[in-house]
Image (cartoon, rainbow, N blue to C red; front, side):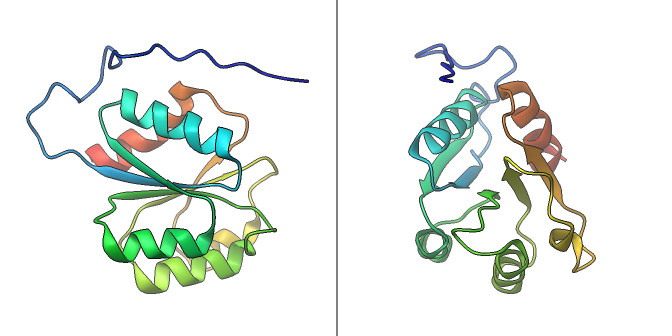
Length: 140
């Protein structure tokens, strides 16, 4: 089954923060699937934030070391690295970085093992669900 998502081109969302003169937050999307990265990045940009993406955890670490990232959205994909290893390594190097985990499977219970509250998006999700997760983490 193929799903097509239509996103308006060239316009920010009605309740976008793009029109504000505030500093734009940068979000990093890590997912092994190009289509998912593109969809999530476009949704982030429609909300008025800057977005960059990585196809692997190694690529994400390189970006995190060279770019100021305000929020990380990362797929919990066992082919990339297990949830526990991923959460531990990211939180060890960037302990204050807000993270939203995404997965097509239910949230792995290990992600909350370090006692830190987690944000989780169950795939498939809508733009609105994504924005509902992002807003409170960035806009307080």
